[in-house]
Image 1 (cartoon, rainbow, N blue to C red):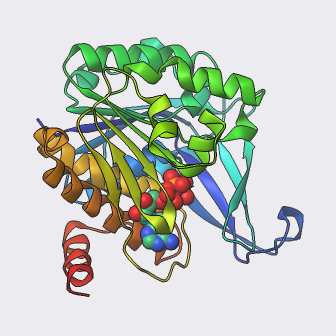
Image 2: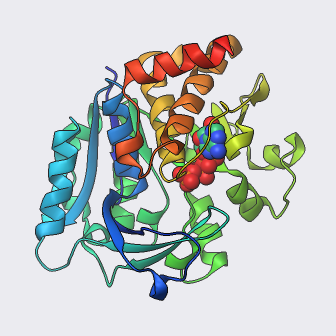
Length: 322
Ligand code: ATP
């Protein structure tokens, strides 16, 4: 039982060919599948793990293209449904000169937001060793209700719940609403991954220090991870905490690094959950996740840049030698 089921949005990203120009000045865009939960499912499968995606796509060319990408990458699609009354979501991205990204979403509403509880594949959810999700699917109904139900079904069947807050502020009615919704399911998760920016958003402090991070701890939590880009990742469990340095690379495009990181971590934990109680083994899991994140920054795009297991292991070996 090592199936990772990832729930949420899959959409088409339009990525400008040049950085440092405004959206309206971008001369061209490259089309790329996106959506963090779908990326995570693909990352797991690329590494040789078993994964499935649960979500709704538009019954349109974009939706069928995205479903094709899941299948080509070996991701189970038994939880994918199609919507006739709404289109597949689109996101136009601005690449800022400092490497940051801004998103402009077309979701009015989009198909992903219309996934209903009655459309959930309960058998698939019950087979999950790990059930992974973000917060975008919490923004509005019916998807929010479907999300909450899916979490409940997976948890009852014994899955670990994995949560990547993945804040996308422009999608929320207000920052307060984003924070309270993100926190509304906080204490159900077994594993939580946030970025340094999300830590600041949720705690109000820009200090990545243990007492700040620990304000986000909850009694049932098994692992809290704070990813810090080129500064690596901090991990916290009830018994130990520490930092695993990033691998030194020359980043070309950091899109998808966080998702590849989560994919690498969940792939390993799905096969060996006991690593959550053993610091040495947990550090190996985080190191492997860092490798997956680092590799993904060295090539353009998210999905095309994600490593397979042989690439990740070779990269890890080289990094250890230097
Ligand atoms: P995303 O940009 O995909 O939303 P994120 O903010 O969720 O990512 P990051 O902290 O940027 O997550 O990256 C996740 C992991 O990927 C990091 O912990 C690190 O291991 C690796 N990584 C990201 N950027 C770099 C980098 N510049 N150099 C080396 N490793 C990196």
